Length: 453
Ligand code: BES
Ligand code: MN
Ligand code: MN
Image 1 (cartoon, rainbow, N blue to C red):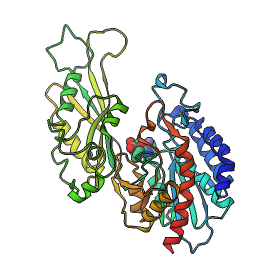
Image 2 (tube, rainbow, N blue to C red):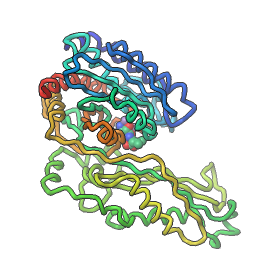
Image 3 (tube, rainbow, N blue to C red):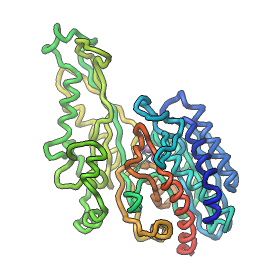
């Protein structure tokens, strides 16, 4: 195994770079053909790795790629999930090298999708290839890589429901999250959910001269800003009535356990070039970004934003708002609660609409399972250290759906770093992480096959 990985190192990387050259941006229809090209690429590599029946499954959106290798029906089955679609790369001008021309600098691969999630799911294909080519797979494996994760996995639910038998397995293995650092490996035990809405405030029937009308009619941008500002109080708590009703507080023990994860606040501030952190009082930065729900504006627009000054009082103003959810909160309930409240605080003189976008359920995985133990042991073998359990702040909505539809738990064996700049310009993935991931994954199979007997 070690030899095989060593001998094929360069090819593994070259293949990943080829995949990164395909701009598979799921959100933007101009890239529709490229998204398909990425799916075809993945399909071919699954076949080359020794998996059977690799195929694209069409959906009303982007295709899902699936392949499997059943070595022995009496052995357990690992279902690997990942996504070959990527976030839009803009703003392009902030990239040091073009997002779809992967470049290696300082032992890192710079490209959109390098870490999220091409670099990470590709490790699985290479690990499977290595197992098949050397000692053989110790258990069955099914691989499902989708192309709509970054736009809410709208068609995956339907696919899962229609292919329950095909997807039947014992554990879902996902590399699409982060570790604390390369010195401190960790395993995420939960993800936040998501409720995402777009709001629009409409005032006068046209843009107005801000001198002639200013002061006399409600300005939709001013109004929107006030409405948004009112959604947090001075303690950093969200003011939507009922927002926290279902949120359960972690016990002191659980909080103390999570607080054991090393965290350097000064380094965190330095990395982001911020003078200080902020958030809900009574909680640490780590808690604020993982076990607590949030409300954030993701984009806001209206009026004149071009060069120079145009004196105009806009007719409309809009914003996109995300709420990260924690266990027991559901996107439907939170979206409804947001809508009711947001409409209720609209002042006379404007009209307000709220349009829901995609959402996702929060997810927690148990740590006392053989699945988690196998993952933990895999890290110990490859990294020489026991991974620290952490709770993640991002969302992978499909994890809750897998549990509901297939009754299987997900193991979040991610190898990225928060500083890999996911969704940002200059996204990157460390060569160390790519290769270490490929090395770690076979240990998971080994331990899982042994423990599950
Ligand atoms: N891989 C991320 C989620 C993630 C990143 C989890 C880092 C933990 C650590 C995933 O691709 C993602 O970006 N998900 C979206 C969800 C969505 C519905 C678009 C997110 O979290 O914004
Ligand atoms: Mn991802
Ligand atoms: Mn993502």
